[in-house]
Amino acid sequence: MGDLVEPHIPAFSDAFQRFGQWLQDVHTRYLPVMETLVKVDWEQVQNRLKDMPKRSRIAMGIAADQGWFFNWQDSLQNTLRLIDDISAARDGDIDAILEDYYEENIEWYTLKLCEIYPSRKTVIQAAANAHRTGTSDGYCLSVPVFLAQADGLFWEISGIESPMNKVRGGDALVGSAWIKSKIGDDQRANDLLSPFFQMHDSDLLISQRTRQKKYTDRGKIFNALNRHQVLHGEVSDYGTRINSLKAFSLLIFIGLHLPDILKMTHSEQNDANEL
Image 1 (cartoon, rainbow, N blue to C red):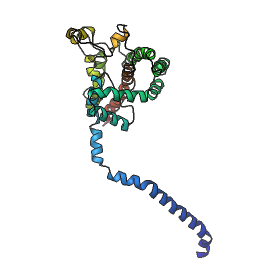
Image 2 (image 1 turned 180 degrees about the horizontal axis):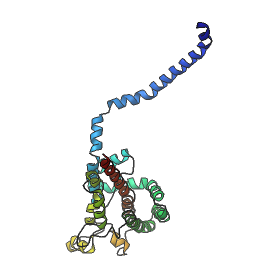
Image 3 (image 1 turned 135 degrees about the horizontal axis):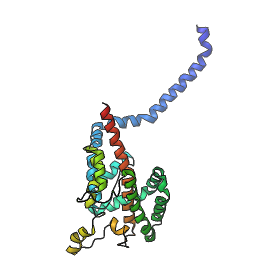
Image 4 (image 1 turned 180 degrees about the vertical axis):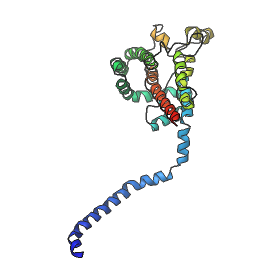
């Protein structure tokens, strides 16, 4: 046996040496990571993720009060950071937080929209390009296009006519009623889509009559972004960076966030029915 093994001793020695070096490399490279993971409070992490939809609903409400919409299409880390930033911010800071966020990510979101809705690529890309000029002229072009495409995508996703209009004889949006019919009492989906259920009261969709009572009759000036005013030519001073990004945030919320949450809810409902 010794005679058979002896010629192979150098090869065995070399193999063990390389294996030893591999173990050393693994130890050097991954030990700090393993030590970090051991120190993580996983129960706290789990609880934070479990509370994320509820915290997201609250943060979405804060953002919507300022005319903004945010979504869950970014990474988990970035989404959690955005929720934390909004939740901790004062009213005056919300604009700054979300302006920076959407300006930084507008190219990525535009590419994602164009990939999912190729028939709308030309017009969405044109609006994004107009926004990126950084001029009032560019914003005057991007705002109405972003708003119109948000309307169009809501119609395309729901398959119902005029989803941004209010239900006859009521306040809720036609599209909101449709969403509710799809998600039912699913609490997580209701949390993640909560802005749709308050949108009819927002400055974005507030009617001329309500604007009159809420602002003009009280001697206040209404200067928020309003879909009807822009798309029907009632105003012409909407061409600002912040209005363009707010309109873009609505487009992302409807075009990316809504179908993802509906898909998630539908998948979970199917899984539950199979049990």
